Image 1 (cartoon, rainbow, N blue to C red):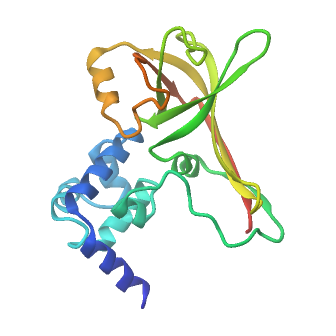
Image 2 (image 1 turned 120 degrees about the vertical axis):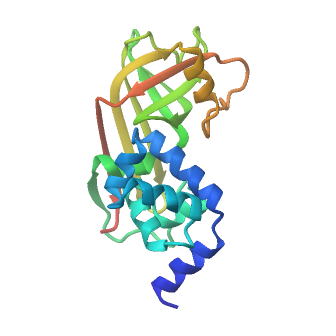
Length: 225
């Protein structure tokens, strides 16, 4: 079975409404307008709108370009992205360290997951796990004002997301540096609450939303070539 047949088959089984929703969500997470996405996918905005309504079966190659523009694989675009990448059958014989591009960093972080925030407190930085979601090229998460994970508004922080497989000697790590900003606008809070992964794993009332926009984002991957 050739690759084109696989692509056409996947497109036939994809739900157009689900794919359109994933495209809209991912576009918002990356801070792209519909016109910007169309430009990156090398198509007219009106044709992009037509594809969103028609679904992948109409033009699989067009959706391949859309997936690339959103830093997603074609399968992730059609079926949704799993939180953790699948494992490999065996460890690389000679692992290498690679630097990730900005686009690759955002692709690794995905739409939501679990990361660690580092806060500048005394006597030393506190590093705490939180579940996050991605919105408009920034990481956002929920906490309480008195929580250990609640930074001051405007505080410089770092945020790290990684996936490590010690047995296979492979994995990746992404580091974001930026300022933590409290989200206080009621409409914005309501919108963020509806994003995938927005519900805090710790449960309870966590009304404080914190946004960390990346002043700098870097990443590394270790594995086979």
